Length: 164
Image (cartoon, rainbow, N blue to C red):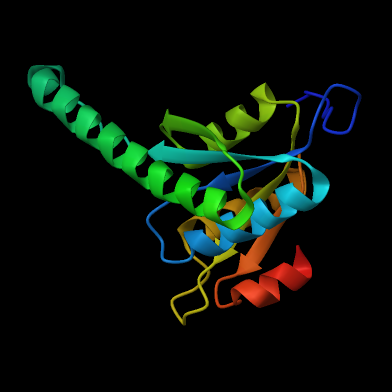
């Protein structure tokens, strides 16, 4: 990845990328990102990644139906997250839906938008660990093209207000 970040150049505004997934703590990442965006006069890009299964050509009709249902579910999740961001900070985030490997899709979205200046994730505070996405991202952290902010999943709104 060689795309130069341009977030703070004239004519550009910084954005943070937030992954909207099925974890309970996604709201903490959206809250942090929304508050940050207001404070820096920036934006938020919300990404929902659809996992695609190995699709057999024989079952193409079923695969198309499953893809359509996954896209509907992705749009519903992004509607909830966008509504939350708007309620927090009166912003309208950009929405992106991608299919495939999460790391590959995250890197591609970052590469294609030179204004994305950070990735915001929230960690599960429970004993089962921080969550699959954070565990996966930890392996790539040393070579990641932008800073990664990990918000503890048990922070309250007021605690996040003090940090963002």
